[in-house]
Image: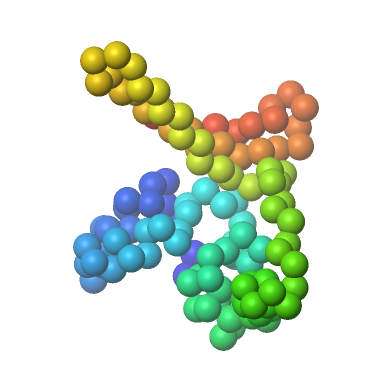
Length: 123
C-alpha cells in the first residue's frame, strides 16, 4: 500500500495506529523518497529483514550486510549524495546564555543545473 502523506506524523491518523506502533516504525520510514519502493542499498537491517521475504534485492542486501558484519566481505562504500534521493539536514547552534537554534531542511538532490535542490520542508 502506497501512502501519499505530506508528513510522517500523519500516520498516526490511520485507524489502529497505536502510539507504540508509531514509535517503533517512524524511524524506519520516509514520505519524501519519490520512489514507489524502498531502496535496499540505503535500508536498515530491520527494514531489510521484513522485505527479504518478498524482495530478492532486499534479501541480497541483507546477506551483504551480514557478510560485512562477519568480516567475509569488506564494507560497501558509502554512496554519499545520490541524485534523486531526499535528505534531511539539521543544523543546531548553541549560543550564550543557553540560547539554542535548530533548523531542519528536507531536500531532494536533482540533476538540474538551474535547480540542484528541491526543498520539501524548511523549519
